[in-house]
Image (cartoon, rainbow, N blue to C red; front, side, top):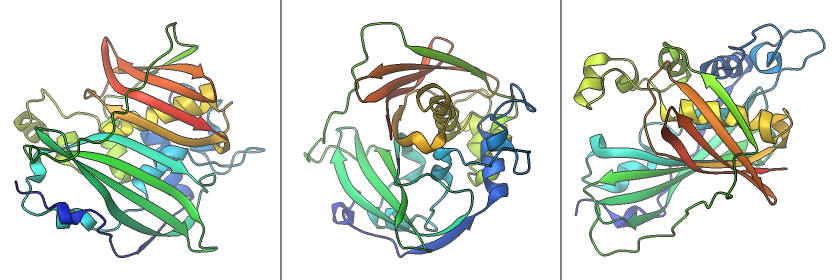
Length: 284
């Protein structure tokens, strides 16, 4: 076994970064904001100077913020094959509404490593503090599967299966992705050629470059702002979802949302495929 279990608890050095209005606009466009009606809908996410409208940031933008440079604590995992790493799940927690500009200090740590048999599951948590007051802004929780690194007899970890209500979704929205959606989204920082280079995508067995999973996550989060948060991103508290199938740019995403007690459950489809599953949203 190549993975180093002593990496559990390893933390990165604090890393300072910032974003501004332009970054928020670019992220919003990258996850489809304004595409259906560029002059009459979602102007709070796509413009900064529209009369009587205050610019706001989409909550899921935090997934492209708070990087700590390089591989951070993942560098302590030992002799593992990063080409076999799969982004399995993503969670975000907004400790306060995401501002349209801020400077933060981020720290990442490996909170646990679980043995899933054929793979090791690495939990990476990144927390960002606002440099203006030292208070937390958001926490990103990434669950990363390293194929062929499991099987050492360790703890398998909790089973987090979402049970959906036995009824049709309370709300459904469809979003068409652009054929060039991945080329637009990659400008937020993820330049992995899997999403832009046809020859590289072919090596992974894909007919063409695929959409970033976190772009699908952002489309879904945007839908949740409208369907579960009354259109107000300030009501968005946390979101968790599991990536289950890749999306090809140009496909139509269909987000299904159920209200269930004090939270919302969701699932995103592309045709007859589930592409983001096990979804839970908590609102303020």
